[in-house]
Amino acid sequence: MTDPLAPLARRVLRRVLGAAAGLGAVATGLGAVLAGPGGAAGAAVGTALGAVLVAGGVPGLRRPRGRSPLTPVAVSLGLRVVAYASALALVSRVAWIHGPSLALATAASVAALLAVGLHSVSRGSATVLELDGTTTATTGS
Image (tube, rainbow, N blue to C red):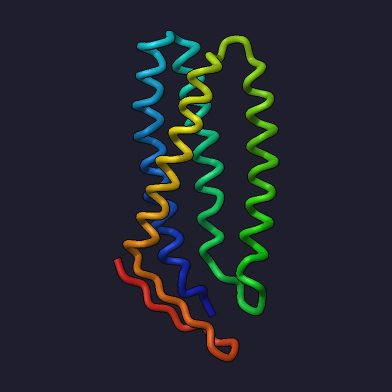
């Protein structure tokens, strides 16, 4: 049996990735204007890191049958935070990336993409009830 939240997860992921692409274009342009090529690179990398951190959590909306719904979310978050921190540590040492642009774009993209994701989930009006091991879901758009 398929997961009843899969359509909602796909819809949220599409919206988050679409917002990330638009935000990345704007941030890269602003970084180029304000800090030159290093600012553009920092903004692009920062937006990509924010997108990976936020979009990686969307599959956590799905609920594997017979398991705790929090286990995949916790494991996914832990892996993403470690990967994100490692990538940020490596990228921040690169000389041609403007550090303030990287930091600002990362913070702005995480905040904006979390807002888009949460808004998408709330507009999906997903209601999930677990009764006696069965899952009933209604999703709307």
